[in-house]
Image (tube, rainbow over all chains, first blue to last red; front, top):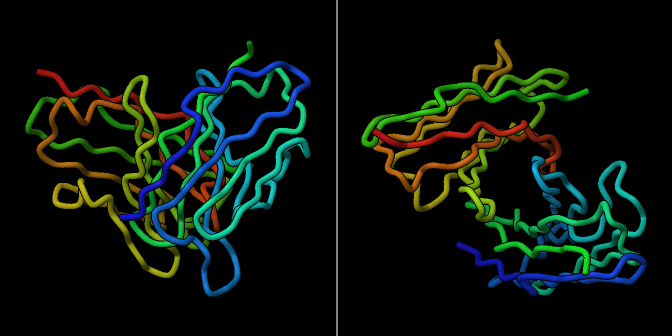
Length: 112
Length: 115
């Protein structure tokens, strides 16, 4: 199985400041079709997770443009250009290149 | 809009079978991939298994021997059966559908394994 490793575990942030979360996979997630099969999800407190970024860098419908995803192969980054209070929660990366799909352990983002 | 609702017993005895059903509205399971995810209290997300419109089914390696997933496209429902449960299977269970990613999530069904 592909192992997904996220860092940091916890990320205190200041509203208006940037923030980034790292995700590393044990195998390349670059498919022969040219896409990286890496997705990002946000689980806000008390809610179901929601899709933020798919295929490494594509924002899901309705996701604010302050969120961006980058990276290729085994190293990926989720960036928030200016954190807002509503961005708190747990962020997860997930590989969807090969079954069984696997999640990273999560990064908890909260306000300082 | 797409909506998913998990249903089933919220309490299951150890060694018995956990059975959940997900009812989907606003989307056809003939065109969406479907997935089960679970989350123990205070912990991260665990991918259980998925089935694609192309007929491919993948299961979590650690659950595979106890797991059965099925779909009823006529009712637009899909189901999960996990046999021989233990306390370690206590979690919130989510059903999810999507194309490339996990696009739409149910609200989650808490399941406790206890005698």
